[in-house]
Amino acid sequence: MTTIAPLWLWIFFVASVLVALFVDFVVLRKQGAHEVGVKEAINWSLVWVGLSLAFNALFWWAIKDSTGDAQLATTKSLEFLTGYLIEKSLAVDNIFVFLMIFTYFSVPPAYQKRVLMYGIIGAIVLRTVMILVGSWLIAQFHWILYVFGAFLLITGIKMWWAAGQEPDLESNPALKLLRRIMPVSKNFNGESFFTVENGKKLATPLLLVIALVGITDVIFAVDSIPAIFAITNDPFIVLTSNIFAILGLRAMYFLLAAMATKFHLLSYGLAVVLAFIGTKMMLIDIYKIPVLVSLGVVVAVLAFTMILSVRTAPKIRGH
Image (cartoon, rainbow, N blue to C red; front, side):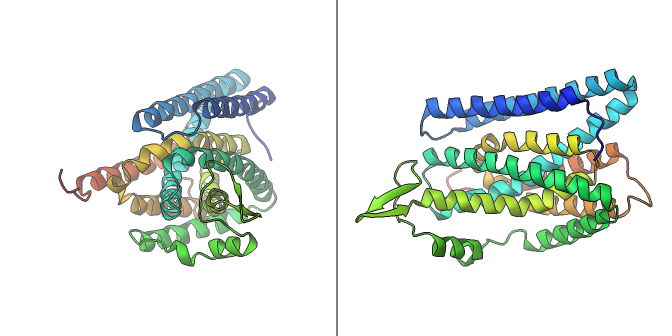
């Protein structure tokens, strides 16, 4: 596994993530259980996006300073930006599944942010391991890129056909398995994961929700991580763009939850993006599509589907 990033930038990145999580936890604890409004979600989303762009600027400077090559630094920064945008985009589909889980279990809005916070920490640990393993596999077996590419192409096609269909959570095998493993109460106990009923210790629905959120992220990680490897094989860029996209997931959830119906066509756009990235990966030894072109395609597809979604959004009665 080779990377262009200097050691001090790795250390700075790890320290930045730890500080960001600490601050987020402190703010979360001070606020207590409360419903996150649209204004708060927008402010936090801007903070996370701003931090990601600031880190990318530092990354550009670090590469230019260590190599003296401004063009190389720009190329690597574009790879980070493209990977970040792809991960953010795929997180949207992930968020809609979270929304479905919260709705199914009738999780009070005040408790949702704690679930998402634990989900983010789990996702960071899981994806770090998967990315490092994936980087090693690609370094050892170049042909695995074709496997990733074919997988993404097939996933994109399946996502297109499944778009617009309401998932049946009741028949979800993961949910059935979890209910067999642990007895679950029908009632919440604040933000606690366990409660006592008739002398028996039971899991609350909140623990079940966290488990499902974790399983969902594993499934989505299998799609999203290979997608970034289509942009770059540098483990530092893959990891940092992925983690920075995840850090803003909680704020983005509350922002999109308030306007979920307005982006009802976004799954089609994400399907096209996955299919494009899969094709790009399978053509890597024949023709390497420039990073700027990849970034342009991703932005154009997502912008088109979002605009079309807003224009064709179902009208709410009384408005």
